[in-house]
Amino acid sequence: MKTLEQRVRGHVALCVLAATIEAVMAGDLAHAEVMDPALPFQHMTPRRALGLLKEVRVQPISAGERRIKLVIRRNALQAKVLKAFGVDTSAWGKAEIAWSDRDGPLRLHPLDMKLVVGRLPTPKGLLVL
Image 1 (cartoon, rainbow, N blue to C red):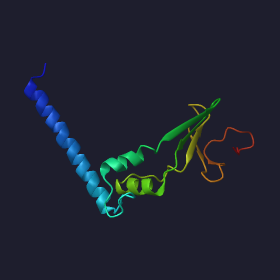
Image 2: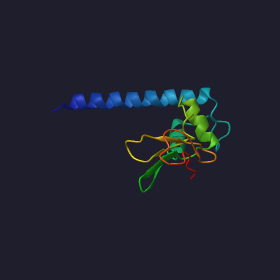
Image 3: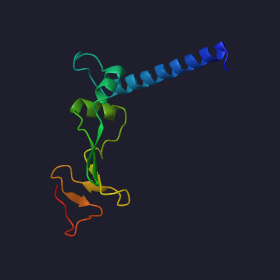
Image 4: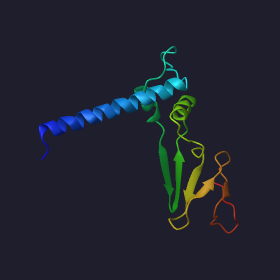
């Protein structure tokens, strides 16, 4: 069993780590000039940025054996926050379709929703959703 001093030291270490992460995030937001829309002359705070980012989700859609994973579209402010944090979102506009676990993912074109690369399980070679 841990002593009171060990627990206090652990708590302090976690608090210092959290404060360090928050300071780095604040610096990244300020360096990227991400401004708070509610307070246009102030840089966005890390807490507000994380609140915005919690709306970005991966949405799985299933229909029989077909499964599609879509990243919910992000708005311009969310994209700017993600860029400030160095997150690569280049593949987020694409969907993945898997017919079964053995087939692996198929890439879906985000604009016209046609399968453009990958293994196509249809006899005609092209599936239009």
